Amino acid sequence: MPGHGGIAFGSCVDSVIPLDVTELDFSDNLHNPAENGAFFEIAEMCRRIYRTKDTIISCSGSTAMLMTAVTAAVSVSGSKKIICERRVHFSLISAFAHNDCDVIWIKSDSNIEKSIESALIQNPDTAAVIVTSPDYYGIMHDIKSISEITGKYGVTFIVDSAHGAHLDYYKNGELSAVRYADLIIQSMHKTLPTLTGAALLHSNSDKFDFHMLSKIQRRFASSSPSYLISLSIAEALNFMSLYGAEKTEQLLQNINRTKKAISQFGYTIPSDNSPRDPFRLCIGTDNFCEADTLYKYLYDNNVVCEFCDNDYVVMI
Image (tube, rainbow, N blue to C red; front, side, top):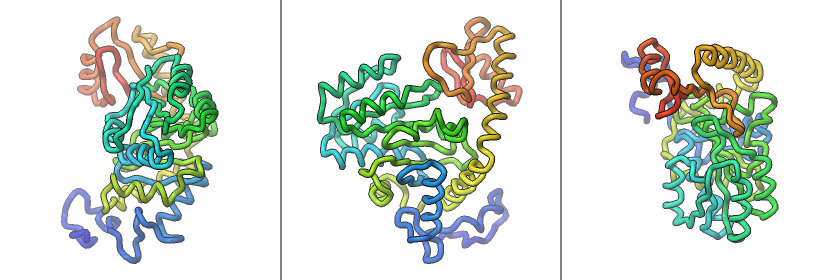
């Protein structure tokens, strides 16, 4: 395996066929990495770049990493109680169902810190607190403040930062959840130059080390993870560690110029009091047309946006 044997056969993927291998003696195994093997080196690269205790990589996206994080938190605490904001990815619902969690839901609003502390006072046996930051619209929480609250009560703090993988390379990572939370999930393929399915799970806690997280990950990921995705993670990490600060600064300048131009045309850019990912572009169309009308117009003119809802067209 794989059946192509590294030999091109006249298809559109011929150029990558020789790089697509499987778990053999010479190629290492993502879920059981050899000491000083390829995946051990990638893990070392992650720890060095992100300054984490441990980091594991995923070829099954953030879905597998969210499932892993929740399962790890429940396993360590012995409790199945979770405090979670309502604005979550559907894979967390699967994680809760898999672990038979008792979930205390809290509102995703500006009072979330107070809501979390109140819930922790009423539920001292909580296994973990989970928030999403940033979300699809770029809305972020004050992760540092929440981490101080969870730290005070000795509860694991998990951040679904699937849309925040780029933030570690902007202003020395001051906006990144990796600085503060216990377990942080990032989808590299959403905002960094990797193949689809690339993700990371960071740990800043002695309770969750590399081997423990890798062992749990096996329950939710393919036993034949893609070496092409793994390679794309290593290549992206190398590129971003060298050029990430420069590239994100250039990108932000372009985005700010675009926001200014859009505003001059009369479209609206969200400017509420919520902290936001500066790289996420949301365009309000209420003064002119329905959001899906602008979305379709841009698509017809070769600008493919991430999605639209009743109020906004969202670009990544």
